[in-house]
Image (cartoon, rainbow, N blue to C red; front, side):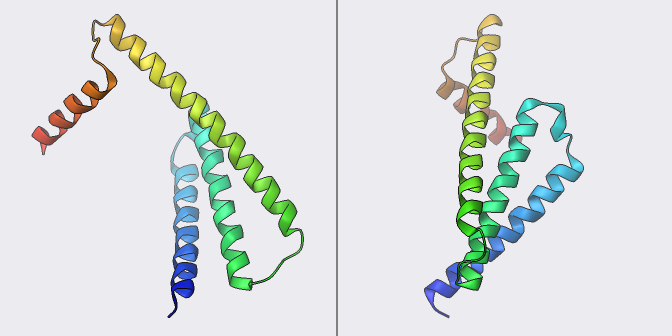
Amino acid sequence: MTTETWANVFLCLLSLVTDIYLLTYVAASPWWATMLGRIYALKTLLFALVLTQNAASELTDSEYPARQVIRLVLYAGSTVAMIALWQMMRRYQREGKALRAALGDTRPQWRVWVDSLREWMHRQ
């Protein structure tokens, strides 16, 4: 098989695995309970749709009806969802840092990671 064929096979597999992950997440997790969960579900849905659209384009090797409109909506929606997810993550990070500081923990973030990794390695 050619490199292009292998790339298309893995694109289709990635699309399938992402769809399975999405269905598992929305079926078995309370994603609606928090803003972060809703944004993550939306981002995962849009990512799955982008992958499906790309796989369909590669498999058919042609323009399908409304392809450009679908691409625009998917890519713009994914961009907005990622910006919202990024802002939410930054807010949670700031809140976590403020909570640690209120409890007297003034370690920089890199030190928190190092300490957490050491603790995790000792549990293994």
